[in-house]
Amino acid sequence: MRKNKKRTFEELVMENKQQLLQDQAALERIEDRWEQRMLKKLD
Image 1 (cartoon, one colour):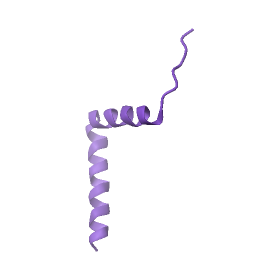
Image 2: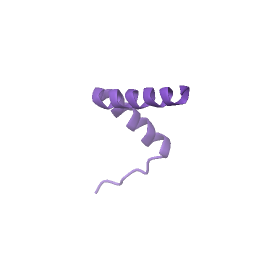
Image 3: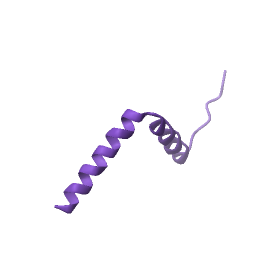
């Protein structure tokens, strides 16, 4: 049996970031949300 290596939180964040950068649709959604937040702050 293969022993699962415990991942640190930082490793999980980096892995998630890489997956998101490869997923263009997710990247678009993130950019849209960020843009909406910035517009709300300006109001």
